[in-house]
Image 1 (tube, rainbow, N blue to C red):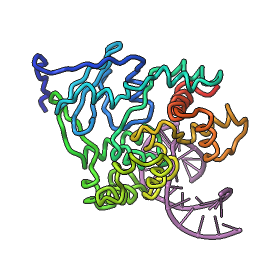
Image 2 (image 1 turned 60 degrees about the horizontal axis):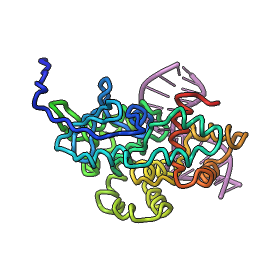
Image 3 (image 1 turned 60 degrees about the vertical axis):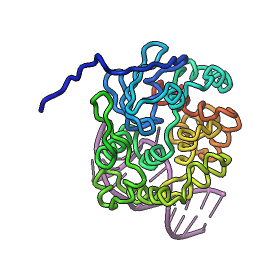
Length: 290
DNA sequence: TCTCAGGCACTAT
DNA sequence: ATAGTGCCTGAG
């Protein structure tokens, strides 16, 4: 096998300014799956483009095939959000001030709805590393191959790619009991029963109910899709890490129901509750509980 | 062998 | 409404 080392002289790179941003925290916090990491460089898909991204100080350097505008990259990385204002809004107590100090620079990305939904159906009862592995496996086997500067990048399978799949074929990728959920979800998107454009125009609660009609999607996964693909920053997904941390910090008890934690989070943190959630999640996983 | 992991659906109360 | 249980799979 001959490895190619293509010349770099004529390769195109673009840059965008990225204040208050840490690419690594944003890509590795568990909000997005399937990107390849090579040193400090991340390879993945944005829309229909294969992309290579890295951070140099307060700049993000990127290449994309087909090309992306800086505005598209800014939107994907959430760099158009006034992060200092968001963090001021959620730093409501000593605990949150500590969390914000520790995690500052993590931004919520704007994922495409379908790949996001697909990833989060897979996430049920799985750990982050395994979700990432499964998303990559599905992309390699069922997605489309793209190139950025000669390096292959695989898109996640489209709804059309998945409806063609037999359940046994998906199971052989390792997704287990989630295989029929993925196929049914793909069918609902392919035949228009789920219309992401229509959902974008709905209230958060309405869109949430629509998402929950998809098999394999309950409260938690619906909230994740709303937060990570629809920028509904007022949502507050409750997973086991958030549950444990919130119980300890804000309830001083165990066995608080997720729905109650969710209501509390939304009310307490307000318009940017989802940002608070992701910061707490990152803090709990990487800095331990207080 | 057993438990657990960033849940969901189904069933019984 | 709410509580209990099974489920693909891999790691510890």
